[in-house]
Picture 1 (cartoon, rainbow, N blue to C red):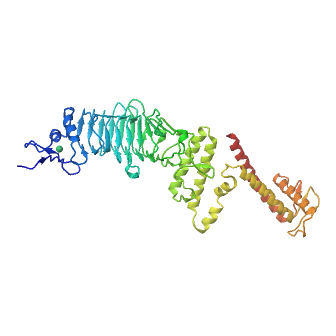
Picture 2 (picture 1 turned 60 degrees about the vertical axis):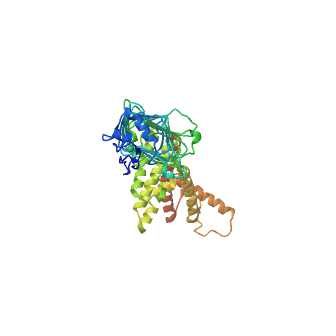
Length: 483
Ligand SMILES: [Zn+2]
């Protein structure tokens, strides 16, 4: 007589539940009649929950905005349909060996003493953003975030964005991520009894290392920007897998507030620390981007970096890194960061002086000269080469302007050497070189004498240049051998 009636419980997306109902007096299916109107699902409702999950009407399972109490979701969920738990609350529930597809626990889900054990998360996205965890254990143990569809890159994210967690020590224990992006930016993580620990290892699938969280070879981005955490953070990478470099977003994190931060054998070529404090962070055997033989940070685009605030931020980071490495006795690393710091400072000078006079100012800035002459005190070859050049150039000058060696005859070719090359020319030039060297050895007026105005002026200039270059050379040597 009547057409089959269906459950008219309104789901979160505006559609109705639609499961067939038989008893005429009801308007909801067995499951929805039980959770209506308080929207609370208790342990005794489990059989109905099971029945609800099994029947497929919508193509997805909507368990949004429900408060689950002591519910055991063991083996209940399979990966056939997307599962929505948006804005739901879980009190002492357990998910054991469940398989989720496109699991969404978004919109401020709350997990009180709720655990995921041996679960697998599949599909395009696994969303725990804005969730809150409160637990005596790790909420996720032995779980795998194995997202499929790696060809659609933006659909393969494990998200713990802005999640809050007060847990025993860590949010994860022996968990694996095989997604394109692991996003936990804005995560507030706090240990209950200890300050807590966050242990990230990036490695191959078969490396079953004892740690809290393993990010596998498919992870292209790890986003921990603005994370708030005070325990021990470890980021490791097995050295034989050193070429793998996920983009690490570690911006605006106060690493100095953590008990310890260690980057061990990590490939940090695409790592961004902008806005973070890294003075006490430990870097062991890490790989960095290099330019001209010196390390640099990700986000340092060299001369292309025209944004002044960006460059200023780089200067701040490089100063921190320099002090950090110096305090740990790594003077080679500290030297690299010193070079990059000065390089960024030079870029600031370049950026501030634009226009015609700016060009002049840029060309002869003190820092530019410092770079040219000794690579900011990092090179001792360069001042040595400059000293040799000064010696040689001034030899030529004295050769043509006149000098006398040890009170002997005055040699002066007066810019017009006699045609042809004779033995005496060569001998006189060697004398000029000796004279030039004498000036550099502060012997002008003693072993070598100048008579003309121009040669006297040249000797004074040569003396000044020597007085600048020799200390630069000695400083660079000292830096070198202090290491
Ligand atoms: Zn229903």
